[in-house]
Image (cartoon, rainbow, N blue to C red; front, side, top):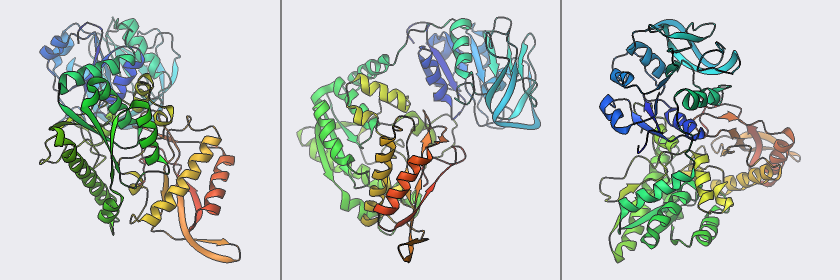
Length: 516
């Protein structure tokens, strides 16, 4: 950090660590994530204006739990603890953290002390998002308790200045009613951070970093068809221009019209040199007979990267290609076990690095960003809105939206159903209101139905409309019945072998956004 204006987010293995960093940015303050093993000396060298301690999956006293250099609390830098970070702070300052036998998960009502620095000018009664088993049972000496719940007598505390403070709940999660107001109040009014950072800085910083890293070397970028890889490519092009060649692997697992859109709209908007690899037969052959979702993921990941290897060999005829650009986002990193002590939810993604025998150096300019931040960067770079606002799409594509073996016939069927759903959601003006609507084919399930005068045994189609801004958590979207009726009627009338449409009404957690 160049000036005393940024915030360090200390990551204790939280699923929400980057979400905290992102909320800090939303308060127009620069943020940077650092691992929990950072030392007081390393913190001093970074010269932050404030520090936020994240949550985490561990118990403070558990063997192997993330440790914390308590000397950080003596540097005179404002510190705010959240959940596990709150408990770590309490223990380091002489408070007591205990296993009380009571847990709080999900929405919880707190009673806040409105005269406190944390809750200044906010309602006394608030709904917040809790996720803890342990609890602070004794506040450190000199600290004031400023929030309670029915089961947690110390839900927040602060010192006399408010600059050393913390909360048991998660203010960074949207389900916390006044969470952003709490964070912003503490950052700006208590910690004295300067609100002078904007998303425009992201593109500038990443372009500068890419220039320095790549120099005069050649680089390729894999375009998936989604917004992430498109924005990553646009950043690198701004950095190194004609040194970049993009590779689009047409694996046959995209939605209807997406392959054509990449080849037409993206090239028209950027002028990027694009190499198209026709790998449809290659992928279908590799997936033949495979039904296990994890095996599918690994096969798709393997074939994808091998396609790049072949394309790179051809491109390298004019000189070695040293770098590979990927549109990896932070939620991908966290859910692939790339955070500090994070649980490994996704077994395969494009974040696990490269096979040992490939010699590319990875460039991931979006690795610290969320989807909506990526979209904002894309708009600032002048990319077409059709690409920017496209619904998120999984790396393995429709391969993990078919429950059962992936075949050409099943892909065609699912593409048709998916197109209908997207058309009707767009016609209803819901495109921007929902995060995405995966359409899933239960290919290995036969559902009894009746059409005309006969009984049918068709496939069910699942609609999974979800609302989210970060993909870490999601709620099922309340799509109007009229729209659902149109989607269902069209799919069962127009898509062969489908006689039933069902709606998934599960939040994340406990369910993931994708089915497989």
